[in-house]
Image: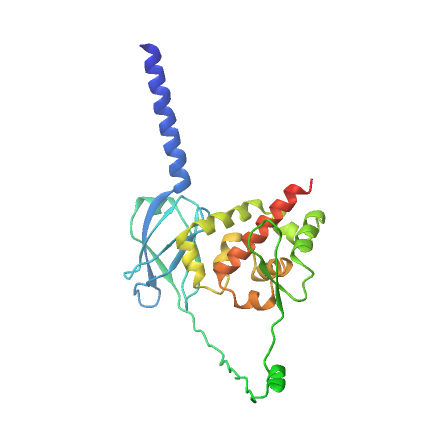
Amino acid sequence: MKKNHLLFFFLLLTCVTFAQTEDDEIGAAINGIVVNDANEKPLENVNIVNLNKVKGSSSDKDGKFVIHASPNDTLFFSYLGYKSIRVRVTNDWLKYDNIKVKMTELGIALEEVVVKPVQLTGYVEVDAKIIPIYDNYRYRIAGLGGGYEGGKTQPGAVSKVLSSIFNPADFLYNVFGKRPRQMRKLKKMKEDDEIRNLLQSKFNRETLMAVLQLERADIDEIMNNCSYSEDFIKTANDLQILDAISECYEEYRILNRDKG
């Protein structure tokens, strides 16, 4: 009988410990509202990312949002035309509902873009010289799925990644080899539908920079070192950039694992 009590107590303690660990990892549900700092009007479709847990959310038509977080987690708020902000979660957030986050509007002056159409003459020999040609190539590593775009000036994806493995001073080694914690967030970002939907409509790299703790120039340099073309780097949305970095990182890991 005594053994049964001990067994029951052990199982209960295990369940409680597991539940606490799971709660710590997921965090508590925090309710809040995002408003315009100038007029207190709610902002709809504000993108919110928990940078620590790599989970995303967005505000509804009333500016309200719900996101899981723990004390000291950092939430990243971004919205087109407004200054992006980072807010640290404090203990009082967990005690009180309807946390109000204010965002400041930015004045954005868009430069006029002039698109010059290609004037064709009707003569094949002449038109063939007028139509612009974009020399982008695709490279692939056998057995690793689909290929990826590479610029004409790049020597090749395989040699680029391999050189980073054998050269400790290489840029990719410094990003991929020395930042395992940030690189693990790549997988979490790819698995979160909210974040994927957010990145698909963005082109400013802000969310990627915040989660991966990289500068814009670093992201461009990763793309360059992974043999992506200049056109792709300039025109891809943030989701495409995320997938590209993730693919390159996985190739780096496989080659690094196999080098020994």
